[in-house]
Amino acid sequence: MLEVKNLEIVYSDVILALRGISLSVPEGGRVALLGANGAGKSTTLRAVSGILRSQDGEIEDGSIEFMGRRIDDLAPEKIVRMGIAHVPEGRGIFPELTVAENLELGGFARKNRGALAQDRQKAFSYFPILGERKGQRAGYLSGGEQQMLAVARALMSRPKLLMLDEPSLGLAPFVVREIFRIILSINRDDRTALLLVEQNAYIALMVTHYCYILENGKIVMDGQSARLKRNPDVKEFYLGVTDEAKKKRYSDVKHYKRRKRWVS
Image (cartoon, rainbow, N blue to C red; front, side, top):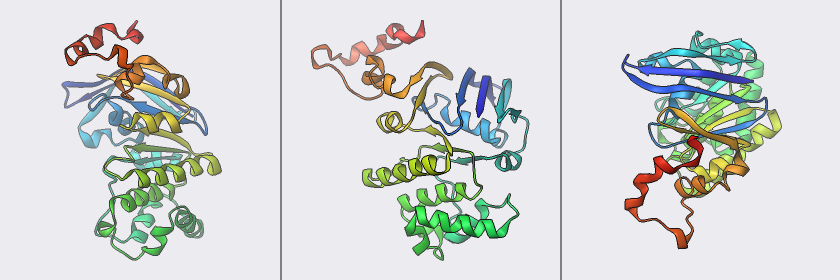
């Protein structure tokens, strides 16, 4: 469904953020991007959704294809119409507008008002609390409710691919579990593919089929999520699981880049 090929991105004409990465998302699949802050995860999503230029970024090389069509030169609204929705980090809701008005903006690219009304009710079925508060200003919702609204707003465009940037950020664990339960239901019921950027590596590997790990703008490892969960380097440096008998001192961590097995 989505093919990113040898993508190279520069910010402000000087900062090389992505260094020739390639990845794919199959139809109905669930794919994660893992990596430290600044690795290039959010940049990848911005490039796919077409909002990179608003962040002073440019694609210097490579291509992005969706459903067999190249999209890296398209405007964001055209990409939305093709079936890609992006839930940004920080949610990006309109706090002065009501819940219902935020959802209406999510369907701005669609013409069939009757279908929009049906999809709004479907969003309320996924997130009942939003139905109870549809007339309330979004800025007065809790953090978890705002994240639910951001996801529900994205669904109003009927996406074939839903991209989520740090959906668990700043939320209580029970709220995170509920949001991911609903996201997985959307994937299962509607065959909506997921591309997930998530700092919580444990959750990301649990809910996805495939994972790419980025470091300094490069993909340094990829594979089935279930297999990566068992990889000793991933366990140590992303899941925080270390064999007590082999636990390293802080001074040993500086050797990480030199010794990690996946570079070769």
